Amino acid sequence: MVGSEGWQVDWLMVYIEEAHAVDEWPVRSGRFVPGGIPVSVEQPKTTNERLGICTEFIQTMGIPKDGELKIAVDGPEEGNLFEKAYAPWPVRMFVIEDGTMQFISAPTECSHNVGELREWLEERFK
Image (cartoon, rainbow, N blue to C red; front, side, top):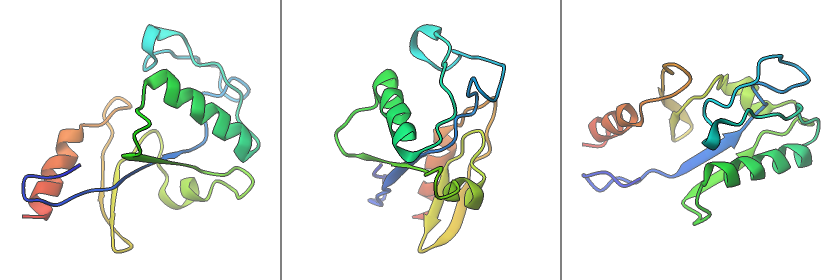
């Protein structure tokens, strides 16, 4: 994302634990999936399993593979370190600048207003 003042933001999406894994959570939802088909996956036990689910997510959601959005996977074998450090449930947007947390989005109905983040960035980098 490039702002009106010339600042630039690098995006990183971190794919974490499944929120509604069928082996842990009885509620199935297709609310945010194209076509409304409920997501039906088990909680991955390995990073390779999570990579496979993440790849399906990228394809299903039509996320472009142009390299602009970098994607990382929080590894179960390592203890889901990103999740433990940042508590990103259900979904969060963070701004980390020079190793310091500057902004954390507040979710509304399991979503976020990207415009709020953009406004914060515009103000921050005036």
